[in-house]
Length: 296
Image (cartoon, rainbow, N blue to C red):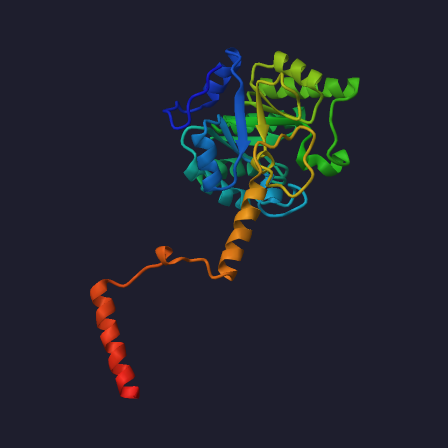
C-alpha cells in the first residue's frame, strides 16, 4: 500500500471514511496529541485520527494515572490541538467523572467538547454498561468512540494495568462489550491490552473499525501515545510500545549544548546579535566622546 507523501493534498478524514477503510482493509493510523506543535506535525504526516487522550494527565501534567484530569483541562489541550489539525479526524477522551454522574450531565460534557473544543468524536471508556449512555450522546448528534479491554480509568477496579480477556469468561465479556457498542453505533472501537487472538475475533465480528493498542496486528488500525512513540515518557514502556525516535535524547543534547555555549560566552555570536544602523552608531559615538571629554 502506498502512502500519501507528506505535504501532499489530503482528503478530510471522517467517521464515514474510517468505515470505508475497514471495508477496503486499509490500516487506520491514530496518535495522541496534546498541543498545537505536535498536532500540526502529526496531522501533516498523514495520520488518520488525532486523539486528545486523557493520558495527558501523565504525559503533560505529571500525574501517576489518568484519573485526576478534569474536563476543563482536557478542553484546554483540545483547543490547542484543534488549531493544529486540518485533515485528521479529531477525537477526545471524556475524562474520568465526565460521564459517570448522570446521562444529562454526560451529554452536556460531550457537547462542551464539540462546541468549545472543536472535537469531532468523543471517546467513552467501558463496555456494554455504557451502551445506553453512548446512544444518548449519539442522539445528540455527537459521534462516539468506544474503548474496551484494559480501560485506564478503571485501573483501581481492575487492580492495576492488567491484560484483559485471558480467560473464557473474560473473552465472552469482551465479545459482549464489543457487540453492544457496535450495535450502539460507535464510530470506532479502541481495543486495549487484550490478547491478539481475541482482538482478531472482535475485529471480524463488528462492523465498526477497531483500533488496537496492545491488541495485536489484526485490528483495523493502531494507536500509540505520541510521547511513547518518540521516547518522551519518563517510565518503562509497555510491551507493545515501539520507539520510532528519541526526542528525549535530542532535547537533552540541545539543552546541554546551549548551557555550555552560554557558559563559554559563545552564544550569542556577533552574527546572532542586532546592530545599530551606521549613522546611529556614529552619532552615538560622538555623544559618548563628548561625555568622555567632559569627564576628563
